[in-house]
Length: 116
Image (cartoon, rainbow, N blue to C red; front, side, top):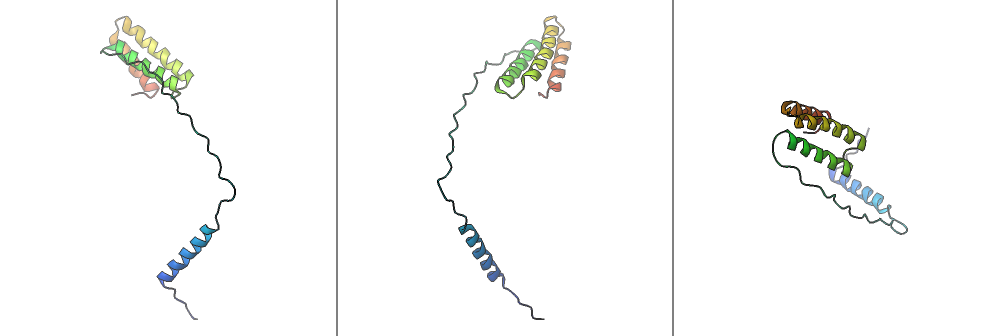
């Protein structure tokens, strides 16, 4: 049995030649396809987030984020409505002076919908 040994340089040269021939056969014929220009999307105008501490501003900030996420499509409308309903219950407790309950309801709502 005769065994032919091919040097690594010769194998590399053969591979390069095969690739060059393969790629050379790939030519585009005809006009290139037209690419449609994408119009820039205007950023939504967002209201500044409420300042302050306590349950009222915290709930208002979260509501502003939810409204923004619904407006930009990052949160779908039905989920945004449920989230806003939960925030309304927290705001009602806050207005009634039940701060601890309001903060608990806010934390539960944010956790339920995956907001930090």
